[in-house]
Length: 121
Image (cartoon, rainbow, N blue to C red; front, side, top):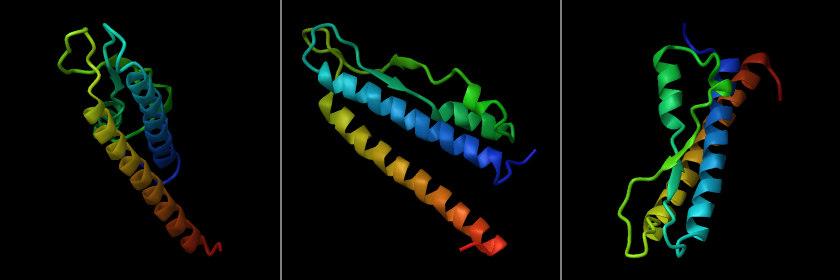
C-alpha cells in the first residue's frame, strides 16, 4: 500500500512536526539544566517510528503511536554527574531547525502541486 498525498502525507508531516516540537521542549530543558548536578540529558527519537511506518508502506496509526517517548541521550558525564553538552545541544538545534524548514517546504510544495492540478489559485 503506497502512501497517498492525502492523509498519509498529513500524518507523517504532523507526526514529524510534533516530534520536532517535543524535541525542542526536551532540548530547552537540557540547556536549562546544564549546570544541575546529576542531570542526564534526554532526547526524542521520532524518526525511527516514521521510518518503520514508511517501510511498511503506510502511515495508518502513526499519529496515535506512543513511541515518541523521551529517552536518555548518550554522552559523557562530567564531574558533577551532568551529561548535558551545550555544543551538541546547539548543533542539534540547528539541525532540527533545518529539518523543520525542509518538512514545511516539502509539504507546501506538495500542496502547491495539488492546487495547480485542480486549478485553484
